[in-house]
Length: 52
Image (cartoon, rainbow, N blue to C red):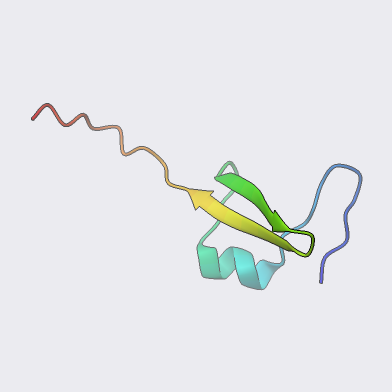
């Protein structure tokens, strides 16, 4: 369980490790209903361009 601290919400170490989260990773938060929030890790662009 985590507690809100000001405008920050710590992500438990076990979840950070399972999702391989690092400083600077982007997260998307979506409220699904009054009791559920979905957290999605936004993939980093790989820096390549597909010209086909």
